[in-house]
Length: 446
Image 1 (cartoon, helix red, strand yellow):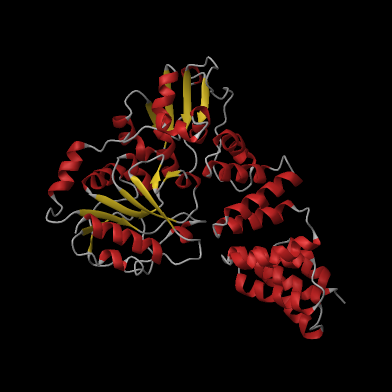
Image 2: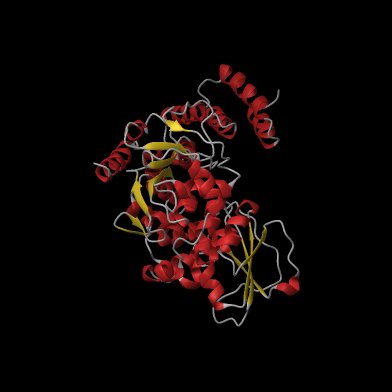
């Protein structure tokens, strides 16, 4: 007779999860109290991304017998995927009593505290992870993110470099034999290459002029959608599509775009000199063209409410229904600057549509943003573009990105035209943020 546990393990290793689940369910009819089958079923549902059923079987396992560390950690991992961060913290508090020397526990619990905006507890957990394994790239990188958010740039940038060794960091690295540029290196022709998303490339581009001041030549590999806008706005820098192969004799060094801050920003007070203000310029002809076609009887406000980011987009996004108190303000004309929309969400008809492709046509989007009197948006590439143009922005912040934590009051230190309105925590309704922005808009035009 085939041992069901061995067969389940074999099928699991072969990634034949549905077959393994069928055998698990069959075996449970004969051994309904076999906790090994409970555990197998919980893990199978987990890898099949049926998190609700996985949580149910982990809970049955924990309630049925003497649970192990892996059971609490497993349920915490599932709850993390379900965005049940209080549940993650509760499970890992118990798991810690069984094993207080596991780096992943502290990274996961620290991440949950981050989502709940409990920075001291997040810091304690990330510090604990680093104490256990000082060379762990995940712990180093995440500590760097928190350092940067708190304005500890001296340690933050150094730790942030560990991102390249992190399995969670999903950006390709340039393959080159050239050394990385740094001040005082004597290297004079720098190839800067874009990494991460298009919003990140816009953000870090604020420091390109500072870099250019230090060297003879700067060439940047960038998302092709940004090239016309960047070339017009930063004429002393050469921009090429990020798929280009640059001859080795045209540069003597390289620099990842997100490492540029480490060269010039060592403290909060350095931001103002290192980062340019209003460093992007919309095409004047396109601005005039867009302005002619938009109403002029009311102040115009661009609205964007959804992020398309695969992992964190849902946490950053606001529903159309939640925005209603703002859209109800009749003294404004609202215009759609959303580059993607929810599949089933109906856009409020009071938000005017345009023919502009806000995802791919950054030249036209920049012109539209230039015409807007203000922008209301979640964190996205659209916010970075509006801020780089110097447009007034009301940012609905989900506490996901370190640079929005660098503020003077509610003003971003990187983009002074941006006012940051943070959500209480990732599970909190957007009500307080919406009401604050509505109040600000009401006061501006009484």
